[in-house]
Length: 402
Ligand SMILES: Nc1ncnc2c1ncn2[C@@H]1O[C@H](COP(=O)(O)OP(=O)(O)OP(=O)(O)O)[C@@H](O)[C@H]1O
Ligand SMILES: [Mg+2]
Image (cartoon, rainbow, N blue to C red; front, side):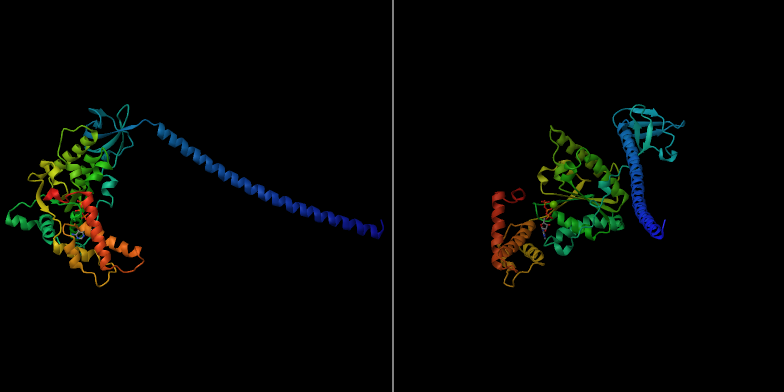
């Protein structure tokens, strides 16, 4: 080989080396990719295996026989327990080993095996989350300044409800029994809910509110239990005030009942009466009820020792209407010419809710005409409109109370 041949050959070789190196780089790259795909596949597999396990457990759980809810009636010396299932007679059964002995007490709610009725678990105390939830214990944002008129009613309400709770020694000294429950009675929209909320806002007592219609509609079949638990909660958090709004939907007269819905209402009412009667002594718990249908209330509710004080919430008079107008226009931009005295005179018979609607309507008129402030004319039209609507809705407003 001469020199030229050697150079040519070595150039060829270095070209080949370069291409092999390039190839090697590419293969390394591929190897890295495959490696990372492998890792991904492995984690994916791990994940899927976990998922399978979870689904299997879920399946097992779904296939496991139902548990029956029962109560422990007695604990025997040999560690067996007497349980009463919600459906049948009492049984003597064993309790599963893993349940801590101190949880097996008389009165505990327990889960029972469907076949053997053995105690499989102890359930948490039955206070419902809906009961303990914030929607029931509340401090509403209504203050006395938001209420037009009704001063004497509010005073009476506080006197009847709050004083006995917060100054019981006063009653003891004078030697009289404070009323147990107060019933607010008046036409729709006159401010019953409002004043109860205002009292709640001021009081230091726990305030528990529930709405009768919700109790029977939302919690079908649970009404009686909920009432019991609400009062239990009230006693635990005493001093407390229980406010039952729309009492008529649970407290309607007991008729010859036909539908199961009616029977449900009945059971709820019976439980309510039982609570009021202090089979479970109330003492530190006061009750406010509100209704716009006192005529259909069950007489039993109104007997002494139950709702024994009735506060009538009237349709507002001129002065009250005037101050309600002022309250609901406080945050409105109304022109100076608006004559509230005149408006209050014009809407004789209107309730607080009507007046609120009038103010909103007046604002709507202004907005429709692209104005930023509300004038007297808007209010006049609004008053006419709301009065007109009321007349068509019911021929004789408030006739029930006449
Ligand atoms: N005296 C009042 N002062 C100020 N606003 C009032 C007054 N009365 C009623 N309102 C207004 O009307 C609205 C409805 O009143 P509220 O819910 O208290 O009526 P109610 O008497 O509970 O009616 P219902 O019997 O239909 O439950 C209130 O939110 C409030 O804005
Ligand atoms: Mg109300």
